[in-house]
Length: 391
Image (cartoon, rainbow, N blue to C red; front, side):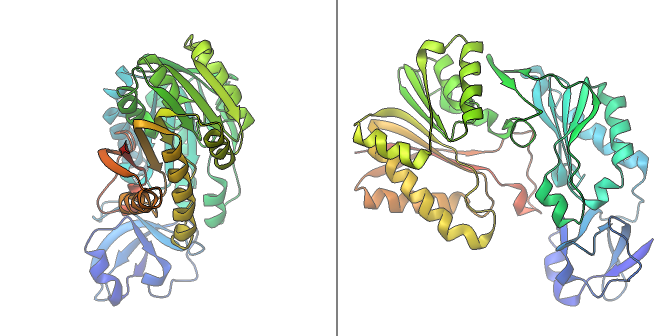
């Protein structure tokens, strides 16, 4: 196994046991290194530090697998897969949809596996994990006996790793629609055409928390995707829900999901740009008691943070203007670069500009099948704040 050396200047940061080592933190790499090759990381004094896999073509040059010299064998990979799956056993008693493998947080960097009624949605996003693809597929079949496996790997991540895209059905037959059961609600999942790995499982607990506030309320579900927030709210006694998303495919799925839950008469659906539709709602003087803002990531990089905050401010002011007295507004950011502090700051600015006080009721995070680790701040990516409007 080849060796790579950490720069002296990177030693203080390494003491936090990071999941990633950037190329700028390493001394010059041997030209013989291959993408995804297992290597040992050493200090400038040639003390062993970690085992990981290397990719000279990636900004994240080394992804840590272990801080011991124990080899990362096929048996070890299978052991980690099994350990991660066992962690989700209690959750799978409540739902048939869960994330089984969550990359670095499950000690399998670059690998994501979601299960929907035992149809697996797979992402292999790094060169190191790509080397283990045959073993991963063999192990998943042995451990789970899945009905099908579909590759939904992230195209952009693979490009950054110097890998070609690899999407499509790998094993079995994937039905056009899979029925997801989630705490009494039913959702149709289209793995073949849906976003990401199929559905936003990370918001599961947050959907349930907001639904508990929904009885007798008029709900506005913005950037609604499949309508999870609004449908759970209706099942818990919300008076009615308006679903808005720019994607016609998402709106069609909301329509199907309302029907699956026998809620056709309680939901309205509008396919439109959310920013524009918020303005039209204000003009019509419509008012809502529970408003959910769950947009796609506005800040995928730190450089995009300022623009993201401007977009967020516009949305929050728009939500305040259509809020009924004592309405609840829930804000969710799925970007590491737009965390709780940034959400609170932009909400404060919106509060000031609209001359409205906002009281914090709850903080929300990603659900337990998407664990975060302190040693990797990027793993805590989903943050939310629920406010009450004090007019």
